Image (tube, rainbow, N blue to C red):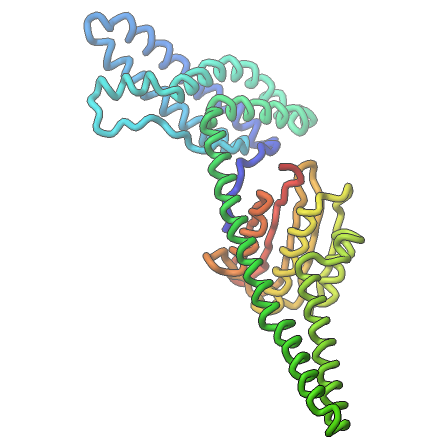
Length: 377
């Protein structure tokens, strides 16, 4: 289960799938090109006798259907992250109004543009695909690169237009901001509760012990000594709790020595063995380090309490734009992101910096929790 995600990047396609895509696409594109051109020419030529209207209506519908097929085809074969597009609604419209709505829908014309461009491209791609069957270096290096370029063309023409992309980004940022506010409020309540139930109670006990000692100072020196010892013990415990609380807000080792040392210190306190591998040079921003630190800490705590695991692995590395944190355990699995749960809290914490939490936890394990945290905003 995955929390809300930003638009994914376009990965390099598989060489074998790219070759198959180029071979079969030529046949599909040839049929599409012939039907669209013939339908448009015949429909426009016979529109004066009304015969052309159903032909143009059918051609328009075929263009839109072909565009949807191309989206699924490119997504499956070229790994192009093409989401279904939003078209103008057609429910309740007459046949003529439905056709006019399709004609005024920008996605229809973008579908048509792609189909008209894709046919001559398929003529070029066909011999390359045939040659890739024989020439292994071409199949490994050249063909996937061409498939990636074709996928980007499909993404630009068949994907959401610029307005829709900006709307989705605004919705994502709005949701991330709301979740960040909720996470900050939950953290504030936690600190307030810890202060009230911990250090504050200890300091009250110190004040009471000192008050009792003051009242017995002249009459019972031995009792005063015992009360002072009690107050001293409570004061040390209060200082320790305040130190732990401050460390929970921002650990000093993280600021001084970075993620590697901080996560290693966390792993050393875990009741189960934890292997830590960190490679985040150059050092990411402080907000990213803090988020990764707390995600790992809370995840290791949950693993020790609920998973039944005997070992865990923490891997943190950096790409060009993200710090990726991955925690794996060999427990019983079955973890999922549910409202109000611990994993939902991790997702909310990641959302404060526009990060994404992904949970893969089949029943029987293993469980993999991954956080993709951007280094730029």
